[in-house]
Image (cartoon, rainbow, N blue to C red):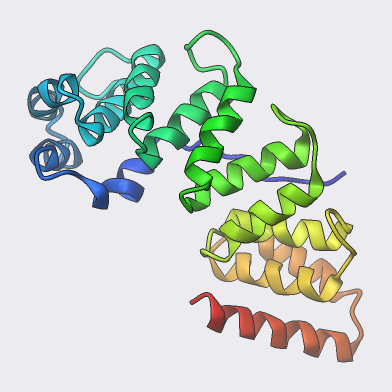
Length: 231
């Protein structure tokens, strides 16, 4: 059975998207990062009411985690939606995650989740590309389409996202969305392993056992070229 990795992209995205903070919301984001949640809420709530997308996004994180406010996925989703409608990538990904994983905003809404992931993926976000790829690979919320899954995994993998590198290797190993290619599978498993994804090492070792010496040399060379191309 094909194994795809699945993540819930909720708790880590303040770090991933913090660089896009607006000047107005920066003090509030700094307070949040420092763990001063009361101060963060004080600084960000009025900005969020005025439509500041970064403030709305961080308030969404606070509601999702219960930091400084009563934990509420409903309110988290409401904040993410406001920010996501303004194009905030982190909010789009997190709203998609809530909708996909049935977190307190009206039950499971996986078709809508896919639409939010797609909006972020179209902006080049690696996590959104990966999550949407998983949906296409499993037929979860969208019609199953292995070619679309493979394409999205590649876009994410080329940005260095290790779970996507692993899943791209799976598609090559299994011949999903294109022909089977053990050399490419080895190379992408190796990239995932180098990126700290432990399962990548297991996949690489399994493929290596079925490669000739000549093909193993080709696979190792391809992995080296990938490392240089996407460093």
